[in-house]
Image (cartoon, rainbow, N blue to C red; front, top):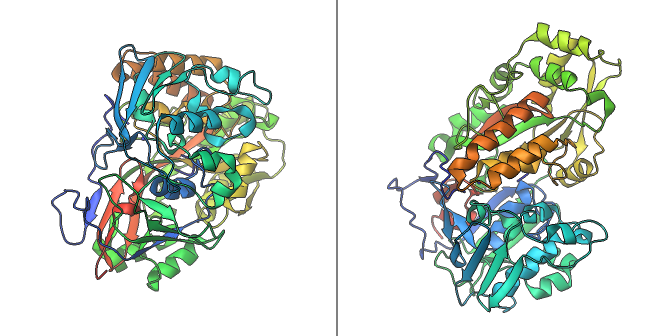
Length: 533
């Protein structure tokens, strides 16, 4: 997930992700316990509401309430648990048989059956549809034939319907992590009527989850969801209504929270963290996070083609200094590109992630120096990135003598489009959150050749080969050494400067009874209960 993880045998460190104003027994008390009322939620403008297209955090936080998939992730452990799937089985990790639970429908009454998944995955994978989540289908047999602008086929040969509630998935190569990745929203089913008019469905989604859209997406204003009375699952939505209020600026959102206009805010302006902590006390939820912030290099720009330039920029930065100055010390400096909360994490793997100004100067000089043009540092508008990005620029100037300017005027959807079009003219801010609990989620999606979230344009066949070897391992434990070797390549080639891993700091208001956070899926808005409703 851009901007923002599974485990079958993968073990991300367990973190308590359930906070409550009235209970601390750690049990999920919301099943079949609808609290009612309207939950007012801070949001920024999503890029898409189609599961096949939405790969940014604002989009996915809404999509996960509108739609449901084969598995969901345990809030505390991150383990995948069957949701719409009755079973997902394989004898060879290559051909998987998926059996669905009976009785689920889309909002328009269409059944959620085998065809609903097959049609959605085919639509996502088909090259001319240009869906952001197409690369998640890369392991399914037939992907090469449906990819590109003029594909040889329209459907994945690896998807076969067995009966109304059963289908098989043949992968190109064995992958033990398959049942773990299909909880990502890019694998959610889509209704036939939705694919008949995807533009309309993007504005007025036809979901299959515990909530349905009330009206249509009011761009830059709000997205309002109402509890779906047709949802057949056990976990009913807690609040009657989820009201996502969209703000162009995180400071405006924080002001709205302070004035009582919002019940939940999953992000806090960096400069307001201490104030918020003092003001809201135990209504601030904090925990170690797994979201990764980086400064990417446009490797398609010849000025950044030499890895010594990229290494020099990284060595010029004092990450802890920036974290202390801008974020009150509450983030974890990155020592690699894998979160410390994940199996597969290794401390200190990045040789170029500790400030060493003299070595930075030497590397830049060896690479031919800088051309004298001011460096353009990019970030999206309205999310509070200016202050820390300015600190990055100041440190680069102090260490390497490079002048800089900030370009922070694009709202997130336009910013992501700029990333996709490879139009950044200098280092750019982006973030990443795990999509599923397999350590590979921090690697191939960001650095794999041709991956849709590979905004740096990095391309290395050796890296791709190691990821493929990890994917083909007998189980996820055996895969980790290959993924580790792939990470070693990244921290040597430095297509991005690893900056830090998050610490979750979310606010909830006095009207919130129980606040829920999921290790993989972030805020569990559908489970948050309200008082006096």
